[in-house]
Image (cartoon, rainbow, N blue to C red):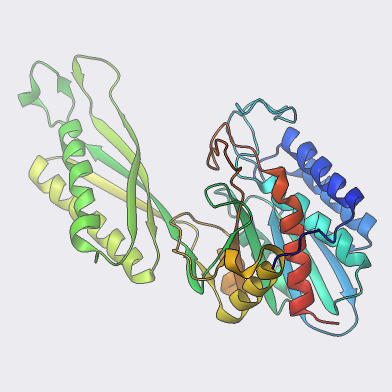
Amino acid sequence: MANVESPLSPELLRSMRAWRHDLHAHPETAFCEFRTSDLVARELERAGARVHRGLGGTGVVGTLARGDGPVIGLRADMDALDMQELSGAAHRSTIPGKMHGCGHDGHTAMLLGAAHHLAADPGWRGTLHLIFQPAEEHAGGGLAMVKDGLFDQFPCDAVYALHNSPNLPFGTMATRVGTVMANCDTYEITVTGKGCHAAQPEHGVDPVVAAAQLVTAMQTIVSRNVKPTDALALSITQIHAGDTWNVVPNSVLLRGSCRTLTAATRELAERRLREVCAGVALTSGASIDVQMFRGYPACVNTAAQVDLAARAAARVVGADKVDAACTPRMGSEDFAYMLEQRPGAYVFFGAARPDADNPPVHNPYYDFNDDILPLGAQYWVELVKIAMPA
């Protein structure tokens, strides 16, 4: 059975909520988490941790050491998103055009709460690195920390991270061995034709028609080139063309993303995208330029660490609420860069509010569910006690 009462003190629970609301009201985006990192460093120092700042720009690492033993890293992301909040919460963003739309404010508060508790808890032994990472959203703060020497300065036997999930039932946990989140690549396609008067299309080469054919043809990569048992999400998210009604434009710009779970599918998708573009160019008379941009790699969990994570979660929410073989998600996470360097586990904690609307992350009405703050912090505490027994 799950622990009914949190081992965290009422004062610490109140502090976690206060930190979360403060961070939410003052969101900071990629590599600009100055106020956020100040708050994190201050609270880590109050907990008695040795604090290092500056890795990956605005990253913070706090270290708690208690004798010889295992060395593990726990990671929380700190950055917000460039979007306007519409939640109407009392603690809503005070910064126009920026909001904590993914719950990183909650992730930070949970790890800070765990740090305060663990600093006074004698039930573990070893060295614990508390990794507060900037710029998870699109900008690769995890890679920046690794390149700055994260694991050279703070060697870890394993690393762990969690993410709230408003589309999972409250108080559940989901993870899996192997790929848990997808590779994420982006592309930019420029279709260049020959502009002309809209009343005389025979005098030009219409890039809009070619782009329309391309949009349709690209979807056959998913339906006809990839095995139905594999996963590929090839999405066109932007189309830009033209300025007025009576001019066929000279070019069309398309942008989008390509999500895959395996290296083989990733390579296949890029190759077929280029081949499809070449074919449409040949039949339309337009020229088509394709630029692919490799993004975050897949987030790959290791078996031993998934087992530890599931056992820790079972202590908190109950074994019946832990899914250790969940379906992979097509979203991406730059914790993947840390998992490329060290074994570890990435897990999702269910945060759906019962009998309430649950806007998804990256939605202007989303707000982190404070009720999972004690569960997330307690999960970190239990994980440390299992992985680093006294």
